[in-house]
Length: 373
Ligand SMILES: Cc1cc2nc3c(=O)[nH]c(=O)nc-3n(C[C@H](O)[C@H](O)[C@H](O)COP(=O)(O)OP(=O)(O)OC[C@H]3O[C@@H](n4cnc5c(N)ncnc54)[C@H](O)[C@@H]3O)c2cc1C
Image (cartoon, rainbow, N blue to C red; front, side):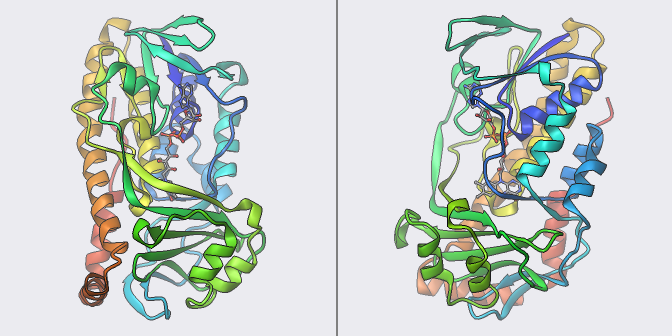
């Protein structure tokens, strides 16, 4: 069986790893001149690790990310540092530098199977056309080409992209910063997230609602908005290289797709279900998609089993991914509340939510195991 994967992001690389290990002929087409990580840190949860185990690289990623539970406390705080909610430290969540994850994925995909500088502009049922006019064909076309997927717009009823109404900055500090707590701190339309890596560096993000202005500036603007919040936020910003800070509007798929499959074309990751990052699940789900599709395709003995395999993939993946996207959107609306009344009500309500309720919500999202073929 021959598989073309469009896009060498986390999802595309992960499915190529899963298929190559089973000897499937896979060709990855990436529009960028070189495959490299975008963004800074990434939270990987137990579900993401079980998916990485299924494609054979879970232990390598665990070793690179370091142990789970590197801080004593986690949850949501107010700008003055007082706690609104607490989360148990028993969740298997580790923070990794995206560059490390890409390094491991790339080492597991033989170099010959990746073609960089190959932008796909048209997609047929079993073929793609590159911007050079070159045609390539396969038994299955996997669209792993992200939020503005060319595979989705060519072959699916594409709802387009929706702006969430807030933007974000993100970076990793250049040196360790001491902290015993992780999580998010919420103000009015503003939010700061602290996610320590095992080596002591901090992956941080800051979100601001559009009603308070666009995230157009750099580190100076972040320091101006958040530097007076509770410790160690000012120290984290001082330990950040201004050139490493990136900002972006937070966008998601405008409406859920009716199917992740169209003929022999199938979508994974952000191409299928781009969501807001409020639950830290976009990449975890992209790896789940990849592990699921690889397991099912590898078990298919003949090319004529492909339609049934893709139908099963759609059944296994669509409900879960779209439910988590809905929950992430709802959570974002609450966390970004900028009106004084709504943000005060939010803080009051959060104080009353018992830790076990917060924990059971996290467990409901991260409870997932790879399918049996
Ligand atoms: C601020 C922020 C924080 C986040 N934090 C987390 C987190 O902590 N945990 C988590 O799980 N997720 C997180 N996410 C989400 C996560 O980054 C994405 O869900 C994930 O990277 C999606 O991977 P992907 O492979 O599907 O798509 P992408 O990473 O977008 O990769 C798509 C690839 O396809 C290529 N491509 C695009 N078009 C074409 C074409 N026409 N031809 C060929 N190649 C093409 C692109 O160049 C790219 O390499 C966060 C997102 C944001 C914005």
